[in-house]
Image 1 (cartoon, rainbow, N blue to C red):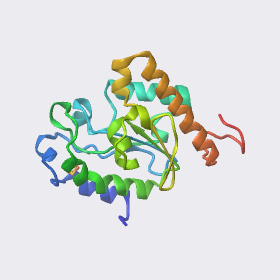
Image 2 (image 1 turned 60 degrees about the horizontal axis):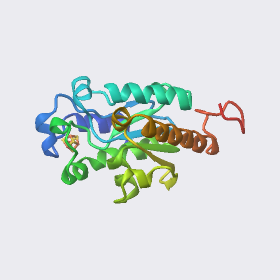
Image 3 (image 1 turned 30 degrees about the vertical axis):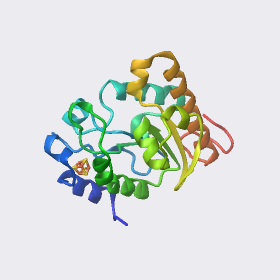
Image 4 (image 1 turned 180 degrees about the vertical axis):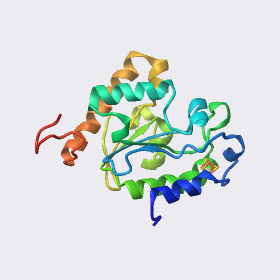
Length: 199
Ligand code: SF4
């Protein structure tokens, strides 16, 4: 088992395990509270994320921040946010299977060290990867699944919500409420102010 998140991040910072290394500006390892009960996992960095070296800092990230605040009462410094692949796929294309496989040890180390009670996957790739499923996101979402140290709640990607409007927005809100309930059931202080109460 890796000893610390910082050590894993240091390793990733110079990683050349897949071809995505050639086109990146920055490795986008992850950000937030490394002891959080809640972890969000997206697909891969976009242009703004690659530029800043931080996950979900473009328009999708702004929407994620907004819905996180409205549905969970949380700011991003209280959760941990990462992606399946840590380097930007060119032209925002989907990550390829060999790239996902090459990068997977970093995500697994993050999950092991953070040990979140609830994982929310954003979009098809993260949901399929962590659930070992080939189902589309519309079938996967809407449910909670037992997962490693707790519960996994798949939802749609915020970029899809930005494109799709009302229905995906309602789906994502409902899934975040599901995540909040899972946190409460796990006794997480992120959403409980006293035993049995959900903030
Ligand atoms: S995407 Fe992952 S495996 Fe590929 S170079 Fe970046 S850090 Fe390494």
